[in-house]
Image (cartoon, rainbow, N blue to C red):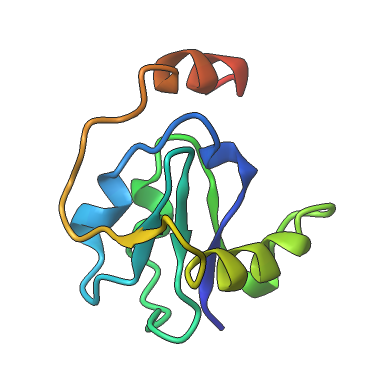
Length: 103
């Protein structure tokens, strides 16, 4: 089962996960990151790298977050989304969002 980025990534876009991904399956838009379900090899390297606890294996998605599996699948094919293979600066709102999440 692939890994999924959830709404904790919104307004953050920390890219620690991108740095550890061995297959470059992350995609980005101006608000957050997504994982391409057909490119993810289920290695799990990204999950502990995320500083806002936004990444889960599909089977471990918290209650109320199941829709993020489809969001990721849809977003990686959307206009304005690009394959991100190198670390970028987080969004200016990232630290505030991290604090909002209590992390």
